[in-house]
Length: 326
Image: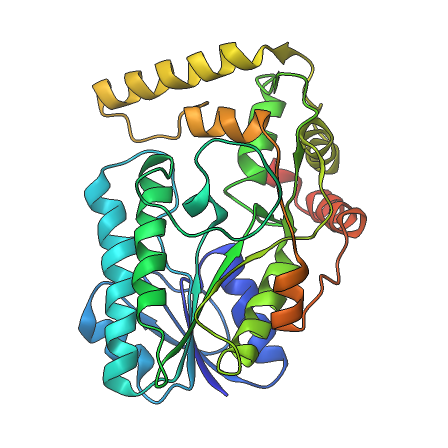
């Protein structure tokens, strides 16, 4: 097929584009800066209709990953990239006659702070989603799924905590804090969390492209399906990078208070760098969040092929070859 991948300069977008290329699809990528992939590139803003139109022309499907992913910043920036960008991709699909759209969302769109234990993909809820990122992605997912029709089949796929070699979001931040001796465990560290190795997430998005049409119009959470205590996940990621794991504990209540205080300081001073802790991060580190994968695997005909042990081994090998990445 001819497939457009937006946001291919990110780790998951790159993995998805490469998986499509490896199986013989004709791939075009759209993002702000060159991704260095062996395919046609369209550079520009995903909220620009002319840019999106150039990318979607002649395509059979689009995997829409482009988004602002952060924990700080103005609502207007998140709304522009995540909400307006999604609206333009939907409008472009309709204008260009593209029949399949895989919208990449996030489990955070349905997370209101309560533990999620074997949860299904509940409806995106902008009112209760935590923070600008989650709220904007919830609105964007609703925009995408409302566009589902006989002429445009839409899936919303929510990969959960994607990580792997070269990850600058989750792994790099954990490793940097651990290397500086500033990575505590909040609470007991026993809350079960699920994660997704990047190659599995990319393969799931490719499977969603194939399944989109025979099934569509729903949201699916993707994960490895191997819940582990949060302390174990943090320790294994640090060990793979060759840095000490978390060495102290902070009471859960103190973490939540500190997250709120840090957010207030960042908001008052207008700081744009990543804060060390937020209320949402404190919730993520102290409450269970793992998902029932049966519906996802049934609909997509997909199963993860890299288990956590293999993933940690691959990450360790990558750090061994890239010591400057720590």
